[in-house]
Length: 246
Image (cartoon, rainbow, N blue to C red):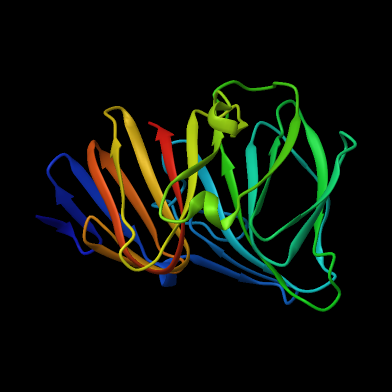
């Protein structure tokens, strides 16, 4: 049963597509960004977040440019690097350069300042900037990085962020489990969304189907309810899957 043009009901699941071309857009010359949820000058009361997922920005940063020192508080923030490299410095004394395939994570907690730059003078850099809401506020700030190889995520979910830091993932203050995967050809991933949880799929690149629903680069899929999910028919697909608190 189709509830509206973007929502499909399948048993105990409601699946709502967030089309790439309906995201908020920002172009500052050095930065081009697409916002899945309200952010900065883009405001849409229908898209303020999903569960405890608050921000997904698809950012393209010109060579030698970036975000100067700025503060954050009570936000769980990670950057999933898709192309080029991202240089980070913060008030905790951390400094790192994360290249494509890497993820940097910062728990802002009681307060932290940081900067993020594209260290290449010639090449642009693309990353997904994601904010989650913490289950507990004003905790001690923290920083971590992880590298995900092609083998880690080819045709399977690789957990890289979780509340308890299980299976080698980075530990977060958010009630969330975040996975990365790539799909090509006849590869298929099956999982179940448990009662009392929400799911979100963000397509970073390529295309695939989730329970028969076609998704392409930049699309999101909000999942309410509980039931089985099948990810297949991938073509150069790279995705993030979020298992979220209500």
